[in-house]
Image (cartoon, rainbow, N blue to C red; front, side, top):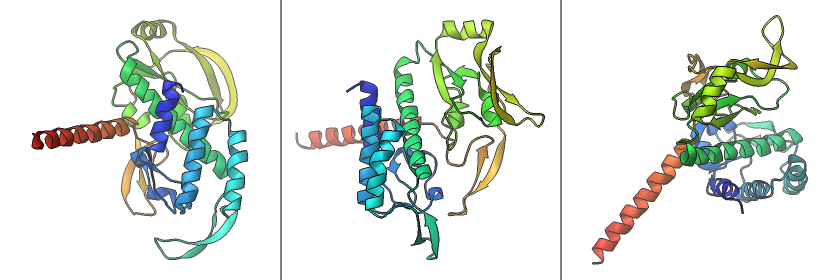
Length: 279
């Protein structure tokens, strides 16, 4: 198995199962430690879904094949279509959407992209000496958020504080990505610019879905981060989220790495203490 694929698989399968009723019950880096699908409250179903995503990572499985395997399992277990469920937080019974083609795609794309973001950060830990910069690039979406358009071509050190909150994906359906570059390429891009697909905007500054190919100047200074207030409807917690990023997505995958390192250090310390006690 390729080392990167192995890393992604371990990242996914090491997550604990965490049943939730609503997506707002689990946000930010909690997703790096817990596997959940909103309203999928049975652990056996969560386990089967998690294992299938791990298989999709192993095999490079496209969404079409993934959905053909997942849908029969969800239908068989009765997790499909609209059904009445009791909200465990409020006790209220209401009609909710369970499995659907749209939700299956969200499950697939969200887990694939967040796993790959973690894998990229793992590579960065090993290569930042020779590839010390990230370039923010747009993905293949037909329409992009205007803020993501503004970040395209942004080139900053891999440890710049901007990436703490803007490490893609930066929202539901976001296909943006980071590309690592060397000091030589950093200087070349500063000199020559970056060739990329540029999305046309209408008279109101909104994306039209049409693109042109242009050479644009890269940006080497982090933009000012403007924020909006977000109130979690489940918990009532108030937080501030950067404009252009969906609630729950403004975090860096390094926290997962740091937590694993801390856990390993604690285990090693406990082992050494035990070993000394047996002497």
